[in-house]
Length: 387
Ligand code: PLP
Image (tube, rainbow, N blue to C red; front, side, top):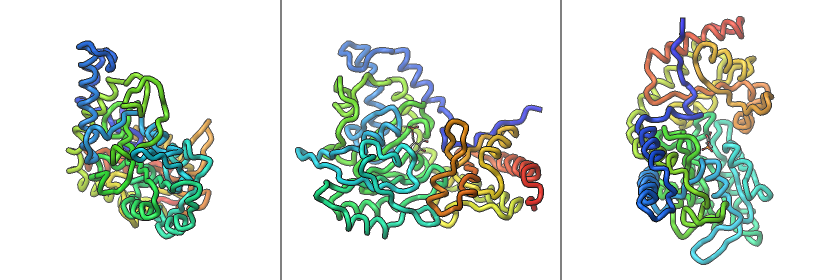
């Protein structure tokens, strides 16, 4: 029997929206360079500018605040700039303070890797504001201004960080703030000005657009990072290189539609809570990382003692269900999740995190299907544990 396949790995990438696909096909059919002044070029430019408007609206700014990139990884690399350009001033960044549970594209520090300080999180995975405040008090302004990189919602646990409070602290110390909002867009209302951050990143493929597009959004046009890619002057000089018109067009349509999903937030949270209650009944010793604090409505990180996350992911795959391991996996080697480690989980449990991230339209039947699979995997992998 062919099993219905379930994608419970939404945080890795949402399904491409039909409307986004249609916009991409139209843009591909145009196939002109958006910098060309002839009519086909102007048509291609039209796709980009319409998308810019939609992406800006998602986070509460006008189109001129949006810089298109190849994705959120590049947006982070652009934001983590060695100097911040403020009006006519050029302010060197002395130290980058980074939340311990950031996505690797931020945690690596980018162009600021040589001046990076990790800001710890508590046992719930929430950034420690006291520790941040102490670090900022000790910041040496003679090296340059402080910069903070703090994500809005964690991709592994869904835990939300108090970005607005953290940004206020940084502003009191004359610094700048970059916020990775990739997982929050479409799941929470996000307003760059209410957050008080300077730069914010968005990824197209997390909101139903295509892979290979993203944006860095500036809160103010007069506070900018130093460009990462220079050359032909595209994206007003912030990001040179011929634009990927089709990907940007699809991204724009996804951004336009993303606000509609916000209504589904409560129902997804109810489904996630049902899922956790069902798992807990079958496997009483499972812990849900960060469950005591505010989280994304669709995400749960299940820490299952005695099961390597990779083994569980394969077992679910055989049941026709896509989930992911919290652990990063490179060259076939499982390494513990840095997020669970930062939360204080011991090494063996940090390799036992199974991330389940639900799509907005998940149904009761699908939750039951998942729980049936969980029970059978539990009996197979941990025969003495299942309740
Ligand atoms: N930040 C977070 C929180 C993510 O989850 C991801 C993707 O998994 C990224 C950044 C990187 O995004 P992109 O794939 O667009 O480079």
